Length: 69
Image (cartoon, rainbow, N blue to C red; front, side):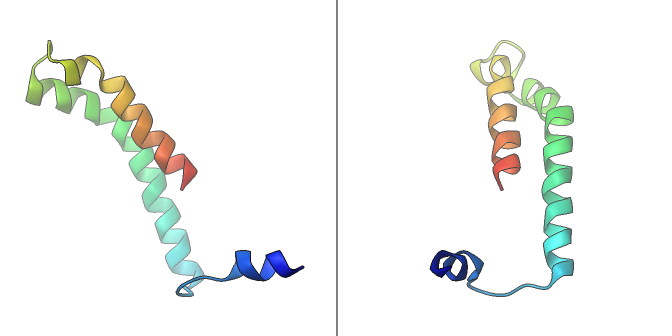
């Protein structure tokens, strides 16, 4: 019972609307990053650069971080 109070504490209590908007924003980021980031990285750095050839790692890291949040 004591742990429930610690888990439910927040630094600032936001409204439910703000929590929903934050969830939707994170969902959209997780949805749009894999769609566009690979192409953007290959245009910026060139198709033979290390960053564009390993763009799947970058995209996967961003999407996994969004899923954890």
